[in-house]
Length: 256
Image (cartoon, rainbow, N blue to C red; front, top):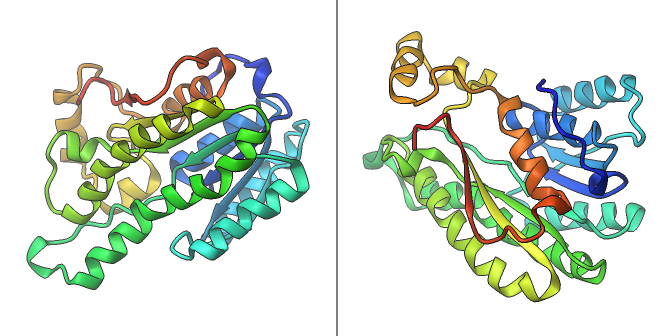
């Protein structure tokens, strides 16, 4: 984990993160816990998520990180988790829509149900999480919503048209909601990671040849790790970025 700046405004601030059990999400949970924020995350991987909670509890941060099992395709359950967290800790001040699934798929094999499934994972939950969290955030005087996009559609990657379409739409959601919520002092931004070498990516998609190719096409030749993304998210969550909204922020080593 990188050594990050300390943001006093994040201390004791309720933070809700989707897909926090592993990969980039786990790095985000860790980073906010180390800011002494009040962090709750959801995921479907109970084993990884509980191990993360145990590890962070052992670090003795000011607040115990909490976790709920939630399939984000179930909007009722998703919004219920948000309301339960708010009931315990007050309005969410930072919402991070991180959860996604980038499974590859051949366009010739995609059925209408397959297409709807890609949207149900990669786009729809972001809106409905905002819908649930924004009223409380407004009542608390504002906050920050950070939606996760993807470098994939920016650089025209193939073999996942449902995923890239959903991720392209994320920034449309960001722009629209930044306009709708700005009057309540709620900022909405998109973070776009590049080719982050999570364990999932290494196991499923990225070959040694891909790693060599990435080093060639990125301006910076180091491989991206989940910890490289967290500092940008911390900045966008903190009051230090008080006038930043409706924009995309790349962490891609200069690929996009």
